Length: 262
Image (cartoon, rainbow, N blue to C red; front, side, top):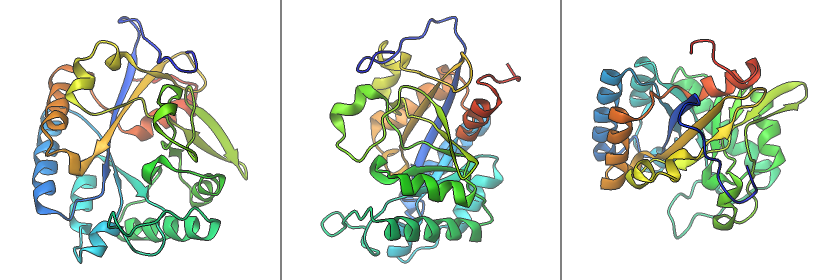
């Protein structure tokens, strides 16, 4: 794959697919109703998705979403962590400020990690808010026992994001203090436009350690009410490849880039 042009994959090639929702608004009843509908449709289709949960917005609203996180996990979906590195506890658009200092990064990661542990979840996957990362983020994730980070973007998206962002052409395995951390670039957004566009739905990336390829499709739970996002999910449920947990993609990288189940 070139630096600025996404890869196209032959139709005959096996593509491992994962849908990953950044869950920031599970405490909102309207968003949760759509999440529940999505969960029901996934169950009927034999899907498994990944929900990367950001607890702070619910805490700021005085709402406890722990039972909803537990419900998602009980249905067999992966629950991981999504953290914005804001200064303090401000989450409103006009007041929030990103602080990527080492101390704030570690404090935010640990705060959200402990909240998920209180839900009975041991998160192994992570994505940074706004995809903004530093080496301290990766080091901290490895120390906490995370398996993968999916904050990276493919190079064709470079023009849309300023630093600090990580751009990779495919999955990589890095080690921090001897612990492996799989870097899994996202490939596209969950929208109907992406599903219907021949060029966009062929955007894939290579798994580390082998010739297999994957697609990692992401969006936010609060975007599900948008018609284009909801219809994109429905299209994939009915016509796209079956989704697996993002954790499975990371495991395949460590196993040599292929999935023995196929």
